[in-house]
Image (cartoon, rainbow, N blue to C red; front, side):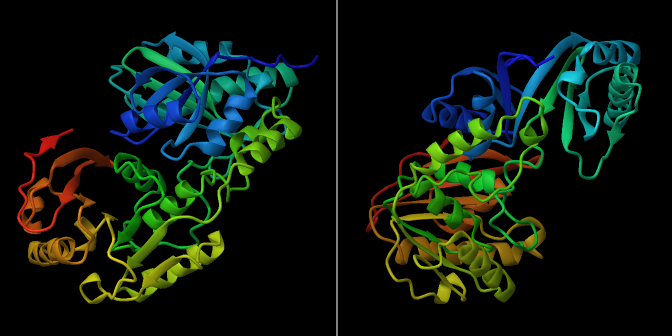
Length: 396
């Protein structure tokens, strides 16, 4: 019996990092998706079936996962969870010869306080239902499953979904290696959206590390889909997947890629990070027009004075003490004053909001962003010649 075209919900839930919901909402609208509501770390959108699944997974830059909700239910305890998980027609989504795993986020439930325990309950229900139907136990693989079932449980409200993404969308697949505390691709893309990046600016990252901000900027300027370098997604293992439809979606998106545009340069004094950056640029085909200099920004001779600076300078585990941070940020402030085109803009990401005073400049805005669960600030500066006074900063 053939499967229906649109089993499950008529909505998808697009997840993102904490604090990026407004950025994701705007990206969804820009890409022609229809947001329905904002949830915890994500946005619900209208779904038109698998084509929406394909487009969301391939195009979105600030999203982490595309979840396909199958069941929403009230859940007080283990029995409620098991019974509701048993009601889902898993046979329509998990072929008996594929491997699967369960991922859970359980919080604020008095009787289910452990996400691993919640995973076990759902896994048992899925296995029991499929074994009853197929007379055969399905394969569970927690390390490299073909299908991921997602459970979100907050207080007494539960949602079971199919994760159509598999590896997070932040895994663009252009970066071969990365140094300590790398900036996620989705966060770098968020910086660019917040900066209003158009692709025609003279962009510089004076602390570019493995080049994530510059790579994301080049992809955005050329309208290269976020998933362009990826090879696999979770939806490819679903019974509803149709290769021809997927290739049509991909081909249409790829046909809208633009010619080389934009001006990019970066500075990185660490030799290994510099080599990692060069390797990623070569893999992505960007080596010819993104210039990376293996030197500290204090000593870099830039090919052009940038009118847009976006950077994630070392902080936290990458810096040994406050004196190091103070010196670095003071030098970076001098860089913004003396080596940039005016008027211009700068966006600098810092972990400790109190460290903003070390730059010797007054930010026009302080955007509150979370890196994992750490509250950080993306400082926005308006750069002028002379002593033109800055506007009073605001916190967003």
